[in-house]
Image 1: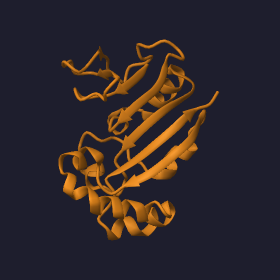
Image 2: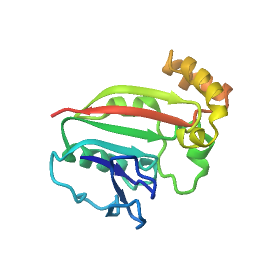
Image 3: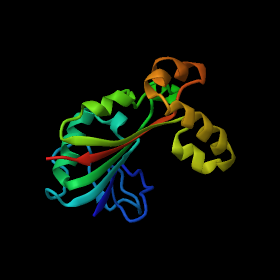
Length: 170
């Protein structure tokens, strides 16, 4: 099973969509600030949390809950706005800010991939022609994420998104 947490009526193909707001794409209506989530232990191969963690009261509880739900060696995919993105701090519904090192500190998960993306992938999909410069900037940023977060992100106007893949560890 693959679960899309906070799908907002736009779940990924092949995913079980979970959101607080009912819609035709939402399979499970649930407030992600309420625990436990309505899934059995070790039932999911993959969980997608795309632009939801920044809205939760305590995002670390959602990570712990994802750990409970994932099968051993399952994958948690996270997309969040980077702290340098103007929408990270200007959106009044955002409660948390993230840097790439945030995800290196999580217990019970092994980082498989961390990538800075110049543009939020939700916006790129709508404007494919803007994707080429975004890919070039993202490529250079990911050569040295520490340098990018410390200095370069401010020179290019901030990065839209952090993409993370975490592997479940017992």
